[in-house]
Image (cartoon, rainbow, N blue to C red; front, top):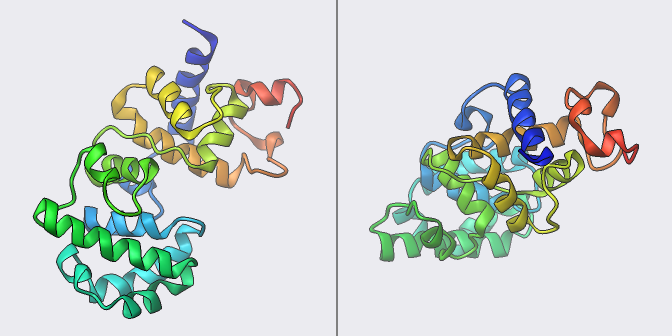
Length: 216
């Protein structure tokens, strides 16, 4: 077994000890349905989950599903999502994806990766969030935290999110993909930060390639 594979499996076990829970409980976004999770994830681009959670209660109270959001006046949606930033683009995307879900999928969020990524504003990361958290299906979202932490640990070498996803999926059991990603995100936010990572108190320090090399 290669060193990266052994380390990845050890990291997965350690992360589960540090951050126990299911994919739904580990996800910081608040939602009630896969559709609401999809919308919240699109809104989370370039902002914090906390900021999204402040606007989605009002948004979903008025437009709780694809049918209602697809018919929403764009100006009203823009006003509701404005605090998340890039609000015109985000409003356009969520109204358009709602319309696409109604027209092409009978109002139900599709579960397949190809179908999800065919929706306006939905990339691979967002699709994997919906699959893993919303549907309990295999999916490993790679955001900036997953990319940074996995490369520091030495469990992935690629410089692209899709490459890192492929490397991690190759060594982890599919049922672990979603929770692994969510735990890596939590660890990246709380400990393995982009600047001044808290290596002294890190529970993964003994497994970390960058720490052993004195690179962070």
